[in-house]
Image 1 (tube, rainbow, N blue to C red):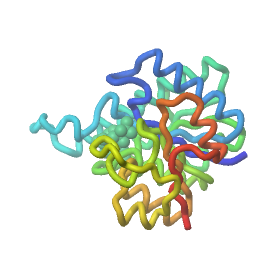
Image 2: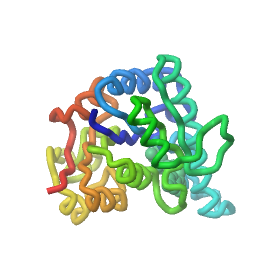
Image 3: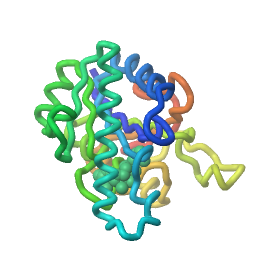
Length: 232
Ligand code: UDP
C-alpha cells in the first residue's frame, strides 16, 4: 500500500480544544482512507496553543510558548487515537516530546515504520520537537524519515492560489506547481522550511480543502483535487 503522510491542523478538531462533531468528522474520513493506504498522521496544536496567537503574553519566553504548542499536539493526538480505536482501527501515538508512556510512545522511525507496515495508523505528536518552527516542518521530516510516497495537507482553502484568495476576488487556483516555483514565489499554505525538506527528499504534496467531505480519500488516490506541489 502507498504510504501517505497526512498533515492535519489542530483546528480540524475544533476551534478551541476539541468538539465532538469535528472529531467524528475527522475520524470518519481517516477510517475510510486507512483502508486503502498506510497512514501516518502529523497533527498540529493550533486549536489549543500557538506561539503566534499568544505573543501578547510578553512575559512568556518564545521557547516555552513553542513547547506549549508541541504539548498541545500531544493532547490532540491522544484524543484522536482514542476516537479511532473506538472504530476498531489499530493506532499508536508516538511523540518526540517527553510525555507519560500512558499517552504516547517515544518516537522512533524504526518502531513507527514497523507499526505502519503491519497496517496500523500512526499519529505523530510533538512536531519536530524543536522551537521556532511549526508542525508543517515536523510533517516534512517524518515523511522523509518514513519514506512516504506523498504528503497530503488538509487546509481550509481549496489549494494553492496565485494570489491570496482572502484578499483578491480573482485569485486563481493552481492545479499543479513545482517546489522551485512554490519556494521562489513564497506560495503560502505550508511553511517554506517544510517545502525545502520535501523537495530535497522528492516527496510531492497535495493541498486540499478539508472542509469539503470525502476529499481526503480522493487526495490520497491522486484524484484531481486541490493543488499538487510536484517534484519536477
Ligand atoms: N511548534 C513548535 N515546533 C514544532 C511544532 C510546533 O515550536 O516542531 C509550536 C509552535 O508554536 C506552533 C504550535 O506548536 O505554532 C502549534 O503547531 P502548529 O501551529 O503547527 O499547529 P496547527 O496550526 O497545524 O494546528
